Amino acid sequence: MQYVDDLRCPSSWYFDVDDDDNQYEVGFFDIKADPNRSNRVQYENATDACAAYIKHEIESIRTAK
Image (cartoon, rainbow, N blue to C red; front, side):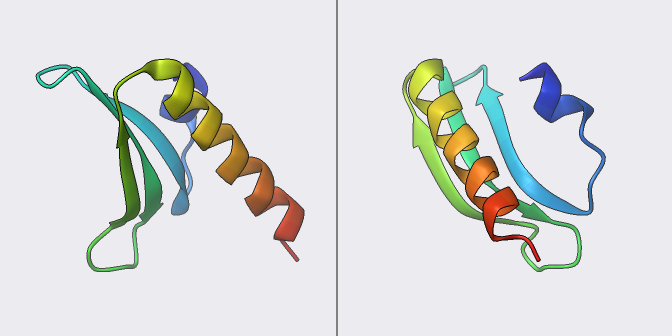
């Protein structure tokens, strides 16, 4: 989560925790889009959310041109 928090990109995948609900969210953030967050999925545990984030991030790198 520290790696994701340190990113300073106008668009990227994110991994966040909602302390109130104890839910983890993975989604795509794009500063130019409205709304800024899309493809949002919530998970009940950090391991599943982290795995989903890593999968999305690797796929983004693989398909980047």
